[in-house]
Length: 137
Image (tube, rainbow, N blue to C red; front, side, top):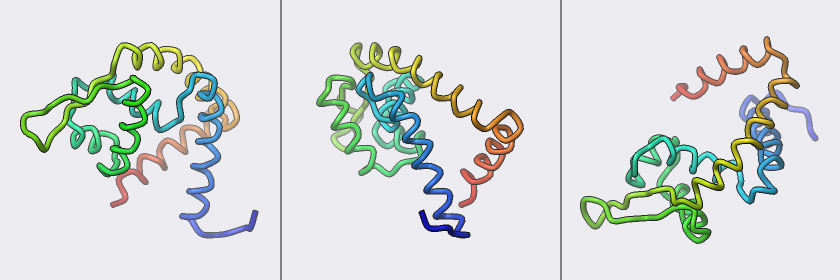
C-alpha cells in the first residue's frame, strides 16, 4: 500500500478496514455492515418514510433505495404507502427482527474486538475525532 499524508485517503482506508472487520463478523448471518445499520435504524424508528430514514442515516435517497431493495427481496423489510404517492414508509419485518437479533451478538463481538485493539485511550480519542468529523460540513 502506498504511503500518503492525505487525510481523505487515510480515512477512507481506515473506514474500509473497519468495515471488513464488521462484515466478516456478520457474514454467517447474511448481512453486511450497511444492511445491519439500516435494520438497526428501522428498529429504533417507527415506520419512517424513505426520506426520514435517509436523513437519520446520513445517506442520499438513491443509496438508501438500493439497500432497501436488497432487504425487501430477502423479506427483511416491508415498504408501504405513505401520506401521498411520493412517499413510502419502511418497516422492519418479523424476519428482519429475527435476523437483527442474531446479528447483534456478532456486532457486539466485533465492537469488543476493535475496542480491544485500540485500547481505551485511543478509543475515546477516536470517538471525539469522529464526532468532530461528522459535523465538519
